Image (cartoon, rainbow, N blue to C red; front, side):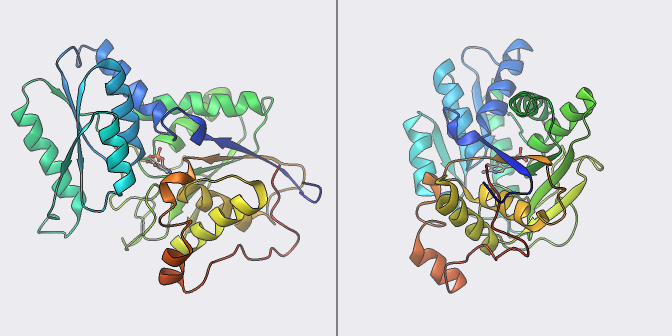
Length: 310
Ligand SMILES: Cc1ncc(COP(=O)(O)O)c(C=O)c1O
């Protein structure tokens, strides 16, 4: 972009075969489990996930000829359930939230425990605590560093399990780079503290702090509201013709917020975690957006110039 004060490179995780950043941890977790003898022919893979990890695992299990039972809840979108079934996964729907908290997550984890007790030879990837998740993302960072000729001044990374950020941060340290890491979280997520609140956009954010969380890995934290995610997504399509998912809009919004602090000439990278087709009935549906936000939100005009993208 002619008026960009800094470079901004985007890593499009949508281009992975399963359409998201989760292909990599899904494959790495399964590969390590096979190598460790935890998974073999006849193992039933059981996980609670309604989004991208589920699709990544469904894909890997289809390839390996393993049965995959995916525990979801009624909030899981119809397209995601259809994709899981198309990959041959068994979709197990938990209909009632946990009576104590009103949340579905504890109820889904309880269902995972039940299913594991029913299947003698089962494996639970446990993406929120499995260290093979961040380990897989050291490669994500390496690819960014290689594509940026060894210099990345800022990395914008959305968070949920903390796998991507932790893996990228660990690789930055291992390489001795000075990259500043900006964590992009959802308003209403508790990963960095604060009170849990209702969130509409799936992907980034978490209702409980993940086991993979480590203090001190992020240099900055930016919280983005659902409304601003939509604005970021819509701007990404309009200005760059990239149809990406909700967390990508959050990442774009975080860059936008920091744009007047980023030194001119800095080389920034932003990870765009998934594709937009899974959000056609929400973020990219004008009626859905108007019903929730009253109008189609737009990226606010920056103090200096237009959002730089290159
Ligand atoms: C769309 C999307 N964005 C961001 C994230 C956050 O990545 P991580 O779980 O590695 O923190 C996820 C995780 O599921 C995701 O699906």
